[in-house]
Length: 199
Length: 199
Image 1 (cartoon, rainbow over the protein chains, first blue to last red):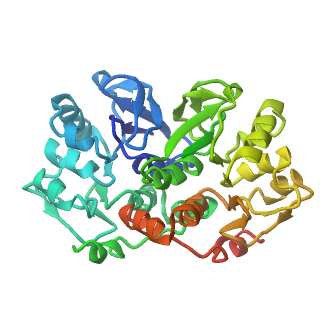
Image 2 (image 1 turned 60 degrees about the vertical axis):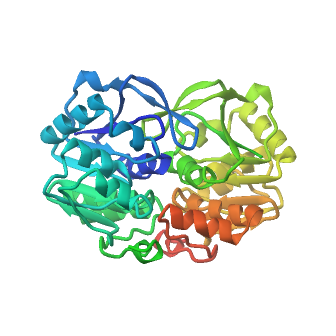
Image 3 (image 1 turned 30 degrees about the vertical axis):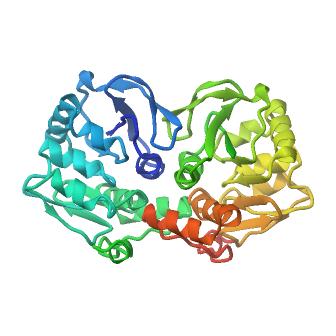
């Protein structure tokens, strides 16, 4: 099984590496980092990560992960990224977004008629990218069929464990959380931040 | 203020990027990624991260962060890494390790006569690297003066927020956690994993 992670300038570090810490414990799952062009891609926080593949290769992935970050503001206008996300989403078995990554899914059309969530502090901008999406304000993550979207940054870890549970079972998800000494919030409705941020 | 993060082949992704997500929100803090040789450094999970600086430059950092990961097993025998850690630790204002990163600090001599913690599942190996260290089994993280060591993987995020509190105040740490929708375990003694892992 292959997991493809989209990178772009200004991606948020924990949106990518929280999930990858958890998915990285699955035997036989390979992880590809993909960008417009292969090479070093600078995160929102500064450190750069290598993308080994560029989107023009159109490799098929059973799982795709779309992170958020300040760079999403630019990428919603990037036709090549939008096309890649739409085509890859149609072929993928599971689609996951973290934080403002759901703005990219929404703008690409993947979330039309679906329910989804996103970062609390960027809620109005993200929801404007998907007028035909049922945006849920109070959620740690939202599952609609094969699409998992998480709230801001850290929520991506909880969502990833839920996706691992969906594919590999609850025991696997719990054993990975224990191994990583991570206190998994396994209830998607348990969201302490909606009220704090006025949603 | 400068934060230097040591990278080596087989570093654990979340050990590095959990902390960097939090430190990345501090205005005026620059982040350098350092390795034996500058270039792409492969993590334990596969994805590679760019180190822009090599250890021979001997740049001074007010903060240094030493991650863990399977690569620590090899690096405890690496004289150049051990020397870099010892010299940098003597000059740094604060020293932080995540997970088995404390094995590197211990072997370099930084933890002699100090108390520290580490990953539960690697506890006996790590503690064997520092026979003169007071190893604490039940702790989310341990502070001894200017040295902060965390338990396994995810615990590095809680510790980083504690170090941010130490330097920039509790309000700053809490606002970063809220921004990142992270439920901070701010009590170093609240450790759910010691009992689970038989410590």
